[in-house]
Image 1 (cartoon, rainbow, N blue to C red):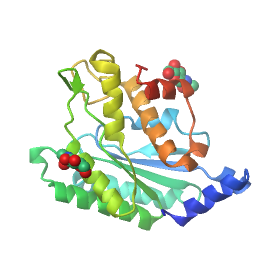
Image 2 (cartoon, protein in one colour):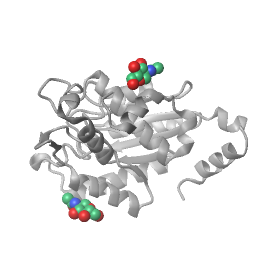
Image 3 (tube, rainbow, N blue to C red):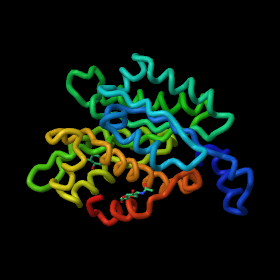
Image 4 (cartoon, helix red, strand yellow):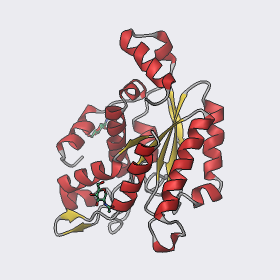
Length: 245
Ligand SMILES: *[C@@H]1O[C@H](CO)[C@@H](O)[C@H](O)[C@H]1NC(C)=O
Ligand SMILES: *[C@@H]1O[C@H](CO)[C@@H](O)[C@H](O)[C@H]1NC(C)=O
């Protein structure tokens, strides 16, 4: 069981087109590194193209951020403050996606600290009245011998383990994005690069495509999100079929 409020409202929604449920909207707070941030990540595409009318949010993704610097630099404080601002009028969801920088040798963040930091983020979101969702890190699109190099397995495992052992919602963006990039292949994947040789960051269309992949994952795992999501069946089908979008 997650938050009883959520179970309660999805129950209501299941029984009837309850006006109570129809009034609910989502406010999304996106916490993460450059793979979420404006100009390189999926966050802006998510807010611009997957969020239903009446819902909105803020992309707090920060280029170069680790789970430690995101707090130390003040970004996390803004996320928590925003939960207080928006929770009376919305269900406030906070996606938390890190790992690309935490994993660097000079990051100063061990895997154990990464796990502790994720756990603390999620528990602070809950205390503030929001709903945390841990996302495993977006895949890099670096190919070797025709396959995507899995370079984030430790961070993926760590994120899932924290989520499962603390009853935190999570979604496996890492594997979903890796599978999609493997399915479309290197030449199609390169079309999403922010610069021709940047196989990590996304250009604007890449941001829209991977935002849809995030949204589809979330709606599938947490069906009550369907009511606050704007669908794009064409794009969802391309992603599900593993063909270039
Ligand atoms: C991740 O977890 C899976 C299963 O829990 C395990 O088989 C795999 O070795 C782990 N990988 C890493 C890199 O820790
Ligand atoms: C839906 O996605 C397709 C690509 O799959 C795109 O061409 C179209 O503009 C999108 N529609 C909307 C309303 O965003």
